[in-house]
Length: 329
Image 1 (cartoon, rainbow, N blue to C red):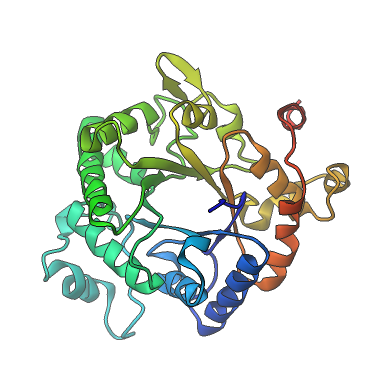
Image 2: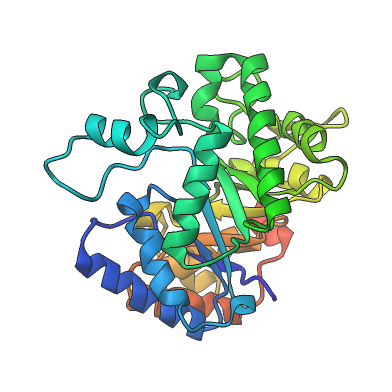
């Protein structure tokens, strides 16, 4: 299956039936237009985004689409409104021995093997799939300051061992890390993730044929660090995150490709037209999907109208690297 250079994201929107229905319509329109990559997470819209995609996937050929999800955050309950979060946590996670309060970081994040296994089962059921293409640890850098570097990478190692077990069991095909600050900030800054250390942890967990195959990080015209900033070091050479991923054989999803539409108001007049495009959204997506090393640029599309506008970029060639760099002088 060919992975589309544009992927449908499902982060935004209220936890409502109307938003669910709009996502289902958008997902079907995206697939019909040639989109093959869908991204979600267990905590997006209290789990409703995964269930909406599950409705999209019904009847589609399993080898015709690629789905990634994430685990790490504790999803807020989407059930009995009279049951508070603490009671829900005790009933669903603590009492069955899946997760204790001591396992939580900042009261909201966990990546213990038992919790990851539990969340994977929840996601598979919601999506209606036996096996998922990609399972991300969701913003693992959330735990870095709390644990310290050595304990943090030890925890990553245990999580990767669990993920290798999921691959062996056939419930996922690959795993990765979906980050916000981790790869964008330089060494020495709080929250920095070392791709080299993550790769070492993956090799320790799964050998040279490990299944740590992907990273996800933000990239847009206002947050270009993945393309421009040498925040990673591979074999003694400073590299941008995208170059480091390429050198390491990793595939890349970019998030916030239009920065939840906020970037569109910042683009100068005529910018889209100069790139041969009709709308600012198309221009922003064209930049992100064209950056060397980007496999798929994710964009939240909660309405069929968004899909119709955005998928137009799939029909045009990507920008060349010189044109991309010229955007930043």
